[in-house]
Length: 299
Image 1: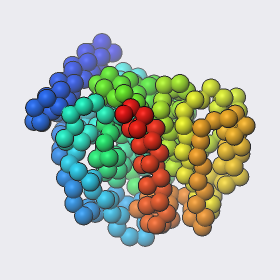
Image 2: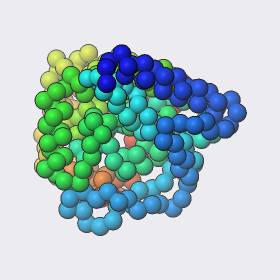
Image 3: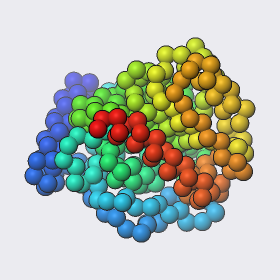
């Protein structure tokens, strides 16, 4: 696909989405989207996506109110359209704050989409982006390979995130925008704050790679919430504490929570390290943080 053709197609589909959103807001009807679905409240649904070593069936909690979800292109990177999961409350009338959701190293899978739906039901327009060019897996070896591809080409991931932010700002009409990510996506949530040091309004990092480099952190004027496990071998407590000291030295707006006796991926229902009680605490903490910095701020 040529860059010109791809750009024209992206602009056309974005215009269609904008019209759809306006129609939904003005009339309460749902227009035709690109792979549209409506999620409604229910007690829970079994996720078919199991991580390696999962102790049992993962259960995703359904959104608290109906949401409208779309699979659509939000960016064009390296002459290829990038498709994400865009979702907003079905009863949306006025523009709502936006949240960028960044997946784990497993990719943009059903569990990530379900979590994006839950966030949207709290009163947000949400874009779960895709850094793996449509790829997702249950294999750690394949996940590592996809992750390394991104790590070796960070400029492409950065451009992807820039366009995701712009999409929520323009097509989503979001007055304020935050980001939330887990694991691989948690590290990229921090990177997003570095990409938009003055524009982004909130960053939630679930056990992601962090840095104590004060030179990199100094420009960041974004509230940060970090949620980590004390027994995480991948993200050692010492590195989190160094990150916290750097934020403190710089006078940043941050909250760091290190949960005792839990490991990496404690919030992933498909992980052997899943801890339901701590996951619920962290979820409540994340929602309160987003509400404080995205919703209350615009009222």
